[in-house]
Length: 430
Image (cartoon, rainbow, N blue to C red; front, side, top):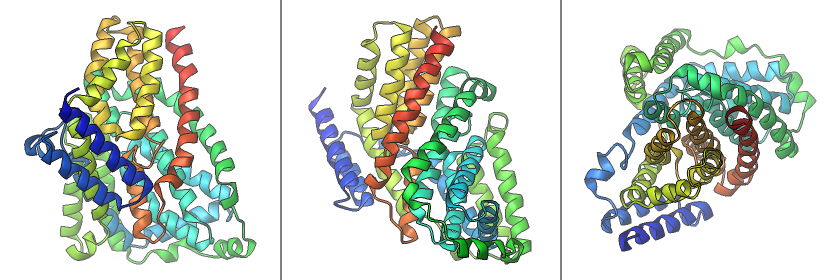
């Protein structure tokens, strides 16, 4: 590697260490690292701001912005209070039952929407229901972030890396359902069991609070029915456009911004009220992180690491699949899985062609998808949903530290990737 590449690696490691140890605020660490990358010419303005592979992913930034505005308007209708009471009553105030219900809702929604949109919608409900039942909110938020990453793995639209993989590999929505959804169902069951063990000390049942919840009428929580119907109509159209992306060819970011604009324009909600819920620190953190990772791409660091892993397998399909799965999980735990998959997908396309193109060689795409998506659970910055959850938690006065998330994430990632290993081997390689 060049001197610039080594300097880029050093800057990234220092910034990542500062984020992990929380010695400085994560936004300051990300922006500082991005600035130094530009000063060192590890990347430049054109690559950092305009290149779709090595720059800030504006589709992610504006998708988040648009959905945050829609959620901000929805919050004023009282619908989150309605859902909180409904969920608590269905769980009869039992904390573990409540977590299971929220996990299933989150995973199911993430399979149809992108996982970031899902956690933006479910987090306000979680805060309200945990407050009602006097439960610590952090375990529920962590479980939801991980459930969104697992559930989103099942479909083409569920996780941004899957969209990249589908485009490169010529894969359809039904391909993802047929090849990944069966495994994801199993992983969700295992994940629920892990949550029962990992968060067991948080499941404090209070009979009095549970009884109080059961007496509430969730319909009384709706504060503005007209605004609710307007908001739900726009949200439904936005969700439908997400699902129909392969047909309509509108980027999710465009759909989210249009939905947010229409909602603010047609309702009595002011612009100030609509943008009050936008997590600006989270958006800025993403921008800085994209620039830093883009610098690693520009200097060839990520490509060299990926190619070295591929060459180490000597063209053996089984070994290549296993190395790709575990290497993708490991690297996606360190860098955001979106730029990683964008960098790795051309290499995988070459490997697929080298192994015959069709049939068994397609397993390499599923190894990349599973490794990148499930590996995103390992650390607090491994996936977009994790970063958003931490931002929402901090904004609401209940911050979740990097290590508080990661100590659970490592367990979940190791378990789910370990289960994905025999699945790929037995279904495609034996």
